[in-house]
Image 1 (spheres, rainbow, N blue to C red):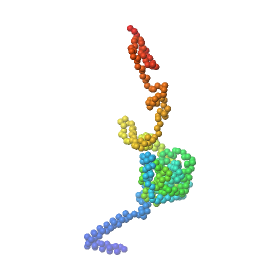
Image 2: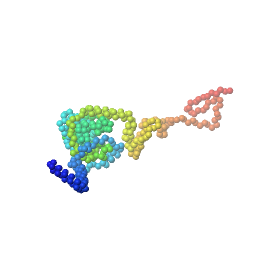
Image 3: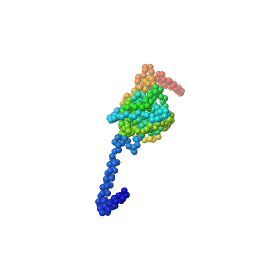
Image 4: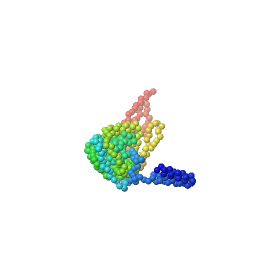
Length: 389
């Protein structure tokens, strides 16, 4: 083997020495050929890419924060309706299996999933609750999310950037559940954890109420509308069945610790809002249909000023708002009613203000020494005594 290689090397050296120009051309052609082969290899898709599976190098996408556009509910309904449903196949998810998890882990998973179904979809019909439970279990299998049920439910509940499920960071956990509604949510959670699959939502990993418009909604694939919620899956390969390959952790974090941490974080945020009242003002403005805050430079007096611009939506909302006349609301007296509205007063009741003096009769002479000055009827009389000379 070594002898044959040595002979080929001697032949190459002789060619280079006797025909240097031809040898250089040949080397150039070889280099170009190698580069072309390398380029083809790099541009040729792999089997996984052809199947639509996500590339492992890129890593799973990060869950977007729950930030919504500042639009009125009526406008949100129209915007959401304009986003088309995906026309392609919508395969169902695989049944969830606990995979040798102990009883403690199963109980914690049931507690967390029941809480999510109750607080996120407590007023929804049974199918709406099943859809929410399916999204949570879909996330457990997806590498973009935690590999446990409680980890998915409480993800982001202590971060200032926001939680993934709003009930873990908006104070809802402080409300005591209603027994009947909790029992219904628990039944839905038990069924989902023992293999029931709600097929209409497919591999959806996101949802939101139809009266809000998250910024991420147009970037995902809308694949179902169930009750008051709209469901989405990741766009591209990360939303295909092959991406849901994460194994269940077979353990669950402590539910009481997660709930306590979420409540502490909510109290922290509440105190921060109290220290920054302008934040509450901004939230209040955002709740007014058609209102838009205008940035102002600090006042010379050092106070905080807020300017608000209202568009036609706000005008329409103001015109439709119920009105109640103030004097009727407070059962105002006739005097106050006359002062505020100018309406006629009741007979026998005098209007507010100084009573006018009557005109003096013609031919009257000025009062002499010791005489009293005439006063209007009903008015008090002040008498001045002047000594005579």
